[in-house]
Length: 164
Image 1 (spheres, rainbow, N blue to C red):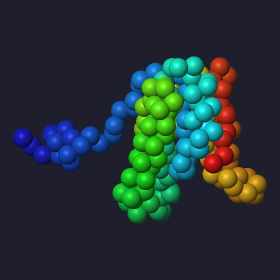
Image 2 (cartoon, rainbow, N blue to C red):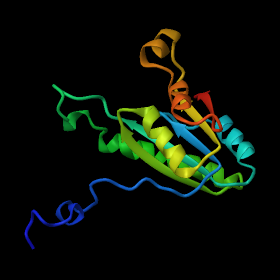
Image 3 (cartoon, rainbow, N blue to C red):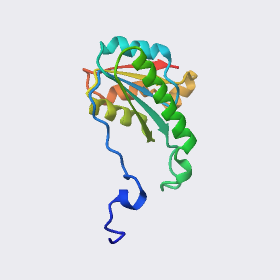
């Protein structure tokens, strides 16, 4: 078979872009590179009412060099493994609490857009955004992720910020 006509999976051993998971969930826990605190797990279990809970962890892509993608700005294998471990830990805590849970790790530059897309795809009613504790000036410079997610979702979805 001609190498140009082969699908991306055959050429590189995996699909180039994974599909967005679409299992329905009542609550989405989105974390921006930090571990999910136990208070967020308790809140998600309470809000879900026994329905499934989804966990999304964001691995940061740091930008671009001269407007072109640069592999050095992508998350490293160790960072991706750390994010997967955090998602697995949150899922195990949710399952011990008695709710079904699914997880996903996404690498992106735009946190709010990715979190809002995951929330829309899963049809959630509540989104809990876990962000690291930061000084007020840093939140001003970097922006408030929970506020940005709230702006991208319909009013029926409640978005709550949780600090780790």
